[in-house]
Amino acid sequence: AQTVTQSQPEMSVQEAETVTLSCTYDTSESDYYLFWYKQPPSRQMILVIRQEAYKQQNATENRFSVNFQKAAKSFSLKISDSQLGDAAMYFCAYRSVSGSRLTFGEGTQLTVNP
Amino acid sequence: EPEVTQTPSHQVTQMGQEVILRCVPISNHLYFYWYRQILGQKVEFLVSFYNNEISEKSEIFDDQFSVERPDGSNFTLKIRSTKLEDSAMYFCASSDFGAYQYFGPGTRLTVL
Image (cartoon, rainbow over all chains, first blue to last red; front, side):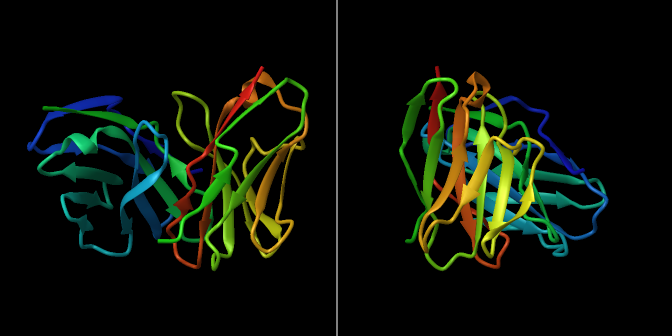
């Protein structure tokens, strides 16, 4: 079974600075999808960014980018120019190409300090 | 922008009672999912549904749970006899043929 691990329960960053959230996963599959979801206090799950494992190029979405290291099974999220609205719980998630379920990590609570 | 909706936003029930959580997926989506999140814990997969049948379910999704698409728009999760440990946030999600699952705002279930 696939597992996703987020080793940082909490992180903090100063407004306008850059922060990196870590995620590692375990799988025997060669093709899959990886996601970062944001969960603000409202508890709505919001997609931040996605990465297809067959793509070597790291995904970027505005201030959000990933560092995807397939061999190391690592998928970190970098948030540049952090804003107060980025404060939330961030979940890393894995989905097999052949399956339907998302497997989530434990989450990292990000605090943005003004 | 189309979105997944869920009702009610908060449901309070007594232990042993049946509850039905409702979801309206995005209209042209074909795959539907339920997840739950116990307070302070990670989000856990319950079940996926496609073509009017369950396509995948987790170990959590035992006989007390069932899902249904009673008409062309709703997707429901029924818990037959609620337990205290069923208290959680329940999220519905839907997707088309792509990998991205769109989540609803969740229903907070409190079992007393």
